[in-house]
Length: 188
Image (cartoon, rainbow, N blue to C red; front, side, top):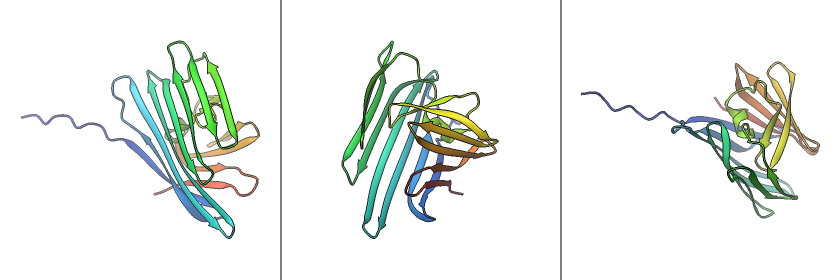
């Protein structure tokens, strides 16, 4: 008697988040196995920092649903010690409605071009031929450029992130910050 086919396992990447060499949190990127033409990506980050008088708590979750390579729905929930925030980008048949309501960032827009590549995709392989990635949190785009082999720069409104790849896999992400960089490292 033949065994029923096992469903494919989700692809999961776990990262440590460090500030000034100290581990302050975790990040988990997940790509669910495709169900027909649909693919779901999630990114969950949990950070707690307590340095003397500096307290920071950030929990955020991104969920992106693609169909046939096009983003249909993106939601971002952020829970911080400042407040709770959210972003939502939804395909309405011929355009997206975009509402990003985040800490010190509010953005509303309509986008007619299909979104085919987002920040969550960067966690599952080095981008080739991509010049921008949809920044789910902000509701607009990072411009992508190759700094050198294995290093992709993502720039948006004066903000810069650096994605470092080895053998096509994201191993380090440096979120550049005027105070201290956040370094996100792949866990073994």
